[in-house]
Image (cartoon, rainbow, N blue to C red; front, side, top):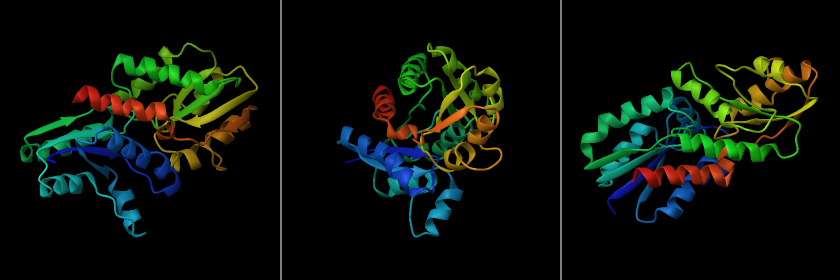
Length: 247
């Protein structure tokens, strides 16, 4: 078997959410593409180092490529489990370019929000999360990269009222969203593949600047849904579909 799929995630040091998200995405890819060997890697060297201190070994992107070469892989499809084509996607493409000459064929798949059809499908999925809640607020990571505009574009595809997407490291902020809310209670959930450090602390934590406390201080009742996007079969299938259309 000389064909492979390399699933690349930013990574998380939280074992519980990793098993339910990143590992599940990889398992689903493996079940769907039985004619390929499936590898996985974390882009964050800091997280990889932290996990190794806990005797957990996960390849960096560079190590994964070296492993592919050593295993005699001739054709590789690289699928990121990213949300947008931001800084991390650019870094992945740059790393892949270094190793491209070692393979007969290399394809890099697209993040979750890449084409208009991705926005349309993801918007419908988000509307389903709201159900009977007064309002739904989703916390994305955000980026200073121009791709941060994808969050606003996704917002424009959402037809239901009182659904808002913000970011923890860019705009819109929690304060921006609070000014737009005209309800008493909200459901707060991460718009990230894993419910890791950002979701646990920046969103649902007890710190003064956590989103939970920001909204609470503004007078809203806050219910937390600590569930990473990778836990949803729909999102995992979106990545499967991205592989399919790339291959």
